[in-house]
Length: 358
Image (cartoon, rainbow, N blue to C red; front, side):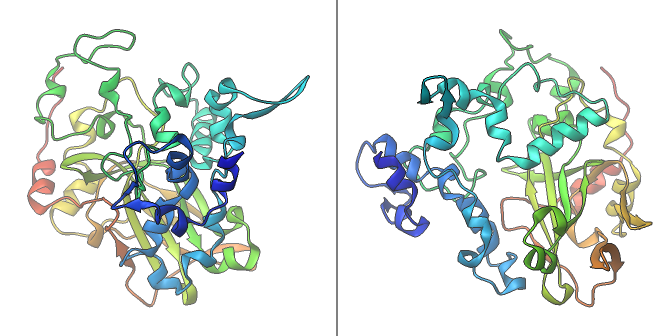
């Protein structure tokens, strides 16, 4: 198939087809669209890594020399091809099965596993497939070389595609005070995502030495909710702490939808006047986690993004055990990939105690 050949093109070659960010020609064919899709190019990882404030500034290793770039969908076969009694065949049903998605989307798979172990069930998972929310255009591409899934126009998926004031197949948006008091300044995820998922403390040296992702990070965390600003709204986010050569510390913050959704949103008290908010609003430092007996223990609750005031623990591996260390350098902080911090005025507003009134 011609699409298999296209799947082997280098990223630079694929996007060289583009005029601006769109493939040349009025109507790009399906093969051209797929060749520029984020599933194929994994352009988002390179965009994050190579940004001016990206992790490449710490490692000094070009993205082309990393194994990350090899994690991509090379052709239709990866999602659609399945073995049947009569041999191999293409299947739309297989591609729509969430288990097919979870073979590659490890963070989402880990989220589901952690929720199951804690007796938490997302309102969407179990009764729905990923393809119920994510469009064919998102998956197959539309001929545009997007830098990231957060780039404008990259995603079609949003809560209000299904949850409307009128209702329908999905529950309607109730006209409650909690849905109006913030005057469209909060994304649904700020209140309805249970908490943030992160693979914490990825150590570049350990990854380079072992070649195993599972050995290179200290913990899978899903205990708190990081709130960031994105596209003018407060939304759920995540972070990645990394340790570069010579134990150089790095933290990146991004908007992120942890696929762990609560039917009932947070109450006012769960965001306003909390310990984290009160300290950050006063310009004081806040430590979301500590290390006890070689394990990272995180506090629970909401953490608004104030990057210069958050003290994350950093760890190195000694004799096979994760051990905290005090960095000699101030962590390099990345905010260039769509996340924005809270202003002093916004933190002050969150410091005011509010009482939930349905």
